[in-house]
Length: 163
Image (cartoon, rainbow, N blue to C red; front, top):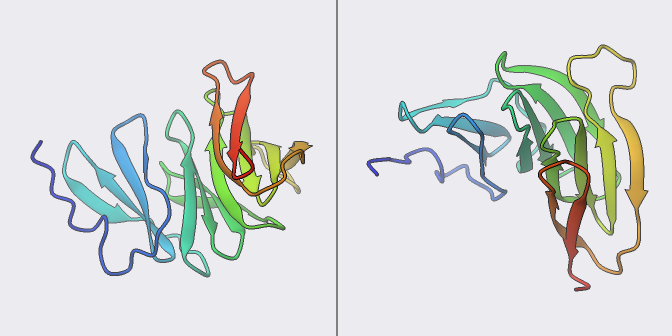
């Protein structure tokens, strides 16, 4: 356990979640960008893509190909991690508290205010409207704070402040 995290929680860190991908890469929001730390090589780089405000929520696909980064103004960037390229943008209507890719990578769950939205993952398809809203769950009385998928991607569990 000889890891040295020099850039993980530096001066520009403004909060947000930290994610470890399947290929032992640690992703953390630092200001309006995302820092990528390779845990095996002890190298840290920053993605060249930047958001217009501070990144607060990130989610990575199970195969570590795609990254979803949401800023504090509810703007979302869909990024190809391997190519370090921005693929799509979308803006949510409510503040995003949690986001999670399904284990098969086909769907994305987003907790936006009192709603849970299921979106079809755009992947590499070229479409005019790449994000397709599949379903919205609005049965919560308070803000949704956490999400997680079952291993077979059939079920989603959501936790909110209404218990």
